[in-house]
Length: 139
Image 1 (cartoon, helix red, strand yellow):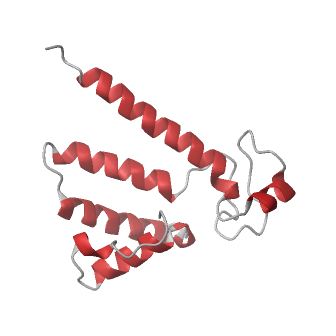
Image 2: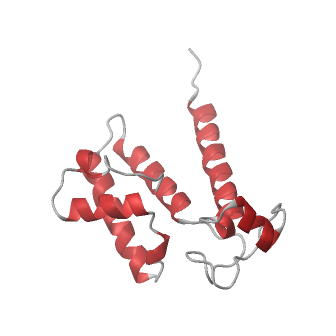
């Protein structure tokens, strides 16, 4: 049976790069309705800076990734480091370290509401497997 590790790695890298590009492309439009996007930007077909008073992307340069890509890259690293069995404790600790780093960078508003509630629950001692069950958003 041929070794498909290289092919799988290429696919994983393609997924991460594609996700990051889409995230950076959509960064200035996050939380906005289609009508508001059209009003502010027209048709978005390239990297643009967010409008001056954007609720979460204010001040970010065009092409900046968001917490979505940061967490995807973090998860990818934890998956690789965990080997054949996912290490939940390592993931939770890495996510909590990531949150502290986000706060230190002054980007606290980039945390999605469901992610924030899950992290707060973990900090209160809720088991990681239960902490995100009540999320109502994708982040």
